[in-house]
Image (tube, rainbow, N blue to C red; front, side, top):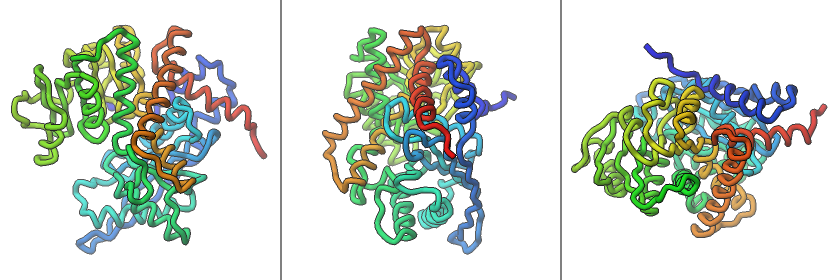
Length: 416
């Protein structure tokens, strides 16, 4: 049986790559290789049945040299401490890559939200928030949605924190409903950012997006929005999948029709006019652009040599292991790494935070324009670094992101 790669060990390997390329000061390296703070909480929740179940939760604060901690909260039965630590690392680098004034954090609760009622999820969220509240706030740590959390979850967090504070604090969390101070365009931001990166990558290798074939693993928020935007750009979506399986059609799949079908049935599987495929088969399809937008560690040294896409755009966090990276690079697959490709979400979260602090509200066109500017600028910085040093895009992104964080630490110094 193949051992599942440890995401935190992968994150440390990536830090090692950046440290070597940057010729990083060993003292700064030691400061970056461990999170600044690791919080573990036992979260008791009274279920609808009257039974009390205690869930284990985490909040990891990696580094705040460039600004307040920023990172999502996920609810999933497979949440682990090492996973959340790795995700906090990647958030730090991600904020550095797109040059926004945040550090990295991440949270998670080990639970199965699919088996919980709305009221149970609300009680879990409010209790978890109350337990991390002393360590969060608009200038300390600002949570956001992640796997199986959404705008409603963020509304509960905002309300709980505001009740504890004694006044309304919309800037304590991002990804809220627009009616409560959320930003226009936040829901589709990660998918749009990934689509912009796919377009820039296509330009870099001379691929015409018109009728370029795309396979997307993970048809949740990120994957579905990326599919819609890529289709608008002229791409042909030939495969989609979710946790139950995938669908394939060489003639192309209408992503909007697939989204409506999934809303009715709970999955894309069974959609008319499509063949059924597995999530594993989707990764190995003949296509121009592969967009893994599900969970981490899906492209490994076992299957990387069978990836036939010309471009891989990482909509998910950590979908490719370091060993797989080497194989893809040697096979001339252009990989747009997660800390660049899926940074659209945190970028618009930053926009939301700025709007909330100023009690302002930007229209959708302004948000999209600012997001496009940020993503194209970040892609350009990373691509130019990859060309300059003759390295792959992940190493280049790490050089840019980690380099900015290291420079901030060096400039700040250590006090006391």
